[in-house]
Amino acid sequence: MSGPQQNPAVWEVIDDKAINSTEPYDELADFTLICQIIFNFAFVSGGVMSFTLLYLVLFHTTGSFKPYSRMLIMCCISDIMYWFLDHMLHQNSRQIDGVFLITLKGFGGYLSYENQMILTGFYIVTLVLTHTTLGAQGFYRYYALVHNKPMSILKTSALFLFTFLSAVPSGIIGYLSFKYSTSVRPGFNYGTLWYKEYPLPVLLVVDVDHIYQKLYYVISASTVTLSYLVSILFAYKSMAHLHKYDHLYSRKTKFLHQKLSKCLLFQNVAPLFVSIIPIMVMVVPLFFRITINQEITIFMIAISLIPAFNSLVTIAIISPYRQYILNLFRCPSRVLRKPMGTSVTLNESGKM
Image (cartoon, rainbow, N blue to C red; front, top):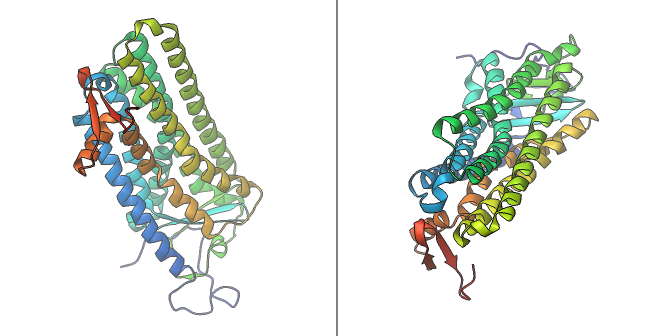
């Protein structure tokens, strides 16, 4: 059975400058094997952590945390969507001469060339969604705090739909860039920019010289930046509201919002290290036509850790979730039960 149709801007070259044999060959075979092992770890850890958090949110959110369960569900859904599509793709990448090339090693690699581009567009949507959800979580918390009640299911669904739709333009322009950006070099064989590999895999290619690729970076960067600004804005407004009405809130409520503040803070900080910084390390050299070889695949694997990091941070910070996991492993812990189902874990000195 023949494989998927190749990119029309890519074709085999067999000569002394490239590959002088028609035998199957892959210069990165050993590196790819190592990456496969690490990627599988990211797949398992991300899946286990994401679905564990979803289970805890659905069935073990009680008391004072209950009004904020829908906020956490938004985070779970966005992470699971990204986790699923990321591992459908499983990308090997190279960046050279202002060109970004990827080949799909996951299930998506069995799809047609057109469907691979579409799938990659959906992947971009979910990647941006993991960031736009941060702003939605900040707004949800502020709404629940000011109105002294959680958002309704309808309003929460509308909020999540808005965050999803705000990520869609990045996916659309990303798809268009994969489809049309190679037109800036008519007659050029982009396969010559790939590693020494025979037969050539199906390559998805974007060229930074095309307007679509420039628009993609502008739209994606603007969307992510705006999401962070919205998250910071509502975090500030929430803290200002708590400070203004400090005398009206119980110690339990203050403790709850301390935990939520830490949770949202770490959910904002974690993507900086496993997503934003790796992406910037890839994007900036692209405009300066700097070659990045195997390192770019490592950066892509780092981005794959987003679901695991987000879920781990949330479980570690929110006491009922942390305590449930500790009890599963029979870890000794002194727990002070508070009214309304809120628990506070104490250390040996009795401090939180």
